[in-house]
Image (cartoon, rainbow, N blue to C red; front, side, top):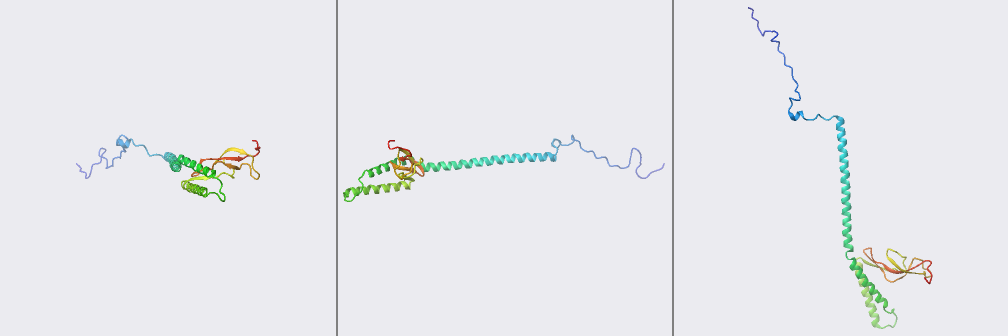
Length: 207
């Protein structure tokens, strides 16, 4: 019997050969990996980016609109607070200017100053005039102003026409030729209109 050194070669004992590598199937993968979606394709990614950019633009537009509305609200609230502060005394101021008008009527009712008049009358007139000046100064410091209308062009924002008369010589139509009361404003807002007589074009003497 012949002995052979080394491994015996036959069909049942082929030469050393590495076994084929078997690729895993989806069934062999862990469940969480098997259910993951495939990576997006470039076209899908670009579409997604465009979608996100559109959403970002929409959110930015909403934010800008909201910011503009908030700014308008802040401005309106500030204006309303300021107006409330400026005009909170409007009713009181209207009553005060009525007193100022009455004081002026009292002064107008006094006889015109003339030489040789009684000293008492001169002192009384001077005293009333001093009171009026001080009164008007106090009103002006608090935003109340008097506007004399006589000789001024008629202004519907300040004047209330009570009558029309033919214009005197040299006076243009539409001019206030007589003011029964002055106009009063509170911080630029009309408080009380002036009662005036206006020179009317084409108005006859008998009108």
